[in-house]
Length: 391
Image (cartoon, rainbow, N blue to C red; front, side, top):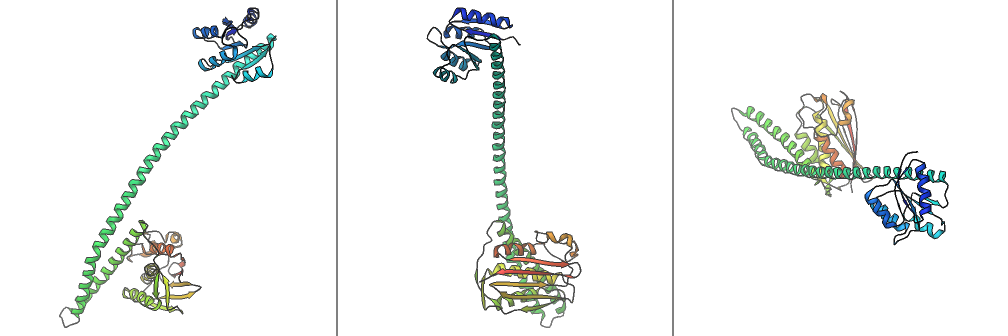
C-alpha cells in the first residue's frame, strides 16, 4: 500500500474522526478535514491532495456533488463518495460527476482501502490515456500540418511543371512552324534545280544528284518537324478526333505515292487493296499518320531488293491493314519498348530515324479507338496488323 495525501470532507465530526484514524492506520496522510464544500475548496487551494473522500450531504451552500464538480474543474483530483443513501435519484446525480468510486456507509475499512487503491489506479490510467490521446492529437495536428505544407509544395511544383510544359510546347510549336516556311522554300528551289538540270548543262549530272539529296533531306527534316508538332498537340491535349468523308481510292493513292517518293533503296511495295467502299468516314490526318508511318518504316528497315506487302480491306465497318516486310526485325528483348517515344532498337545501325514514328501510330490509334499488334523476328522481318473502326 502506498502513502496518499487525502482530504476528508464530512460534516459529521465523529464519522470524520473514525475515517481519519482508519486511513492513518494504513499510512495515509490527511491534509485536512472539511465539514463544508467551501472549506474543502480552501484547503485544496493551499495544499494539493491525491484523493478526496467526499460526503454527499454537507453543511453550507455547496453539497458534495456541487463541490465535486468544482474540484473536477479546478484540480482534476479523484473523488470517492461516502453516503448512507443508495437510492436511484442520488446515484443518478453522482454519476454525472464521474466519481472514482462510491462507498455506502457504514463501510468496512478493508473494503475502503481497496476502493481507494482502485480509485487511484483508475485515475492514473485515465490520465495516462489522456496524455497519450493528447500526444496523438498533437502528432496528428503536426502531421496534418506537414501534409498540408507538402501538398502546397506539390501543388506549386505541379503548377510550375505545367507552366514549363506549356512554355516548352509553345517554343516547340513556334520553332517548328518557323522551320516549315524556309524548308518549303528549300524544297521548291531543289525541285527547280532539277528542272533546270534537264536542259543541256555541263554540270547536269551533279546538279541533279545534289538537288535530289537536298530534296530527300528536306523531306526527312519536314517529317521530323511534323512529328514534333504532332506531339506538341498531344502533350497539350489538343489531339482530337475530327471525322470527315474520305474518298478511299484517292486516299490510298496519295499514301502510296508519298511513301514511294521517299524510297532510297530498291525496295518494292506490293499493294493488295480489297473491295473498299467508295467513301469512308474517319479522321484523315490520323488515319494517314498510322498507315504512312508503318509503311515508311517497313520500307526503311527492309533490305535492298526486298518486297514490302501492304494489304488493306474493309469488313464490319472496320479497316483492316497489314504491313509486312522482310527486313531487319525487332529483337525480342526490345519489343516491349517499341511504342515508346524516341525508342530505337539496337539493330537499326546507321539507318536514320527519330524513334517517333511508332509512338505517333500508337497515339493516333488511341484517338481512333483502333488496335495494333505485330510479330517480328530478327533478320526475317516484321508484320503489323491494324484494325480501325470507320463509318
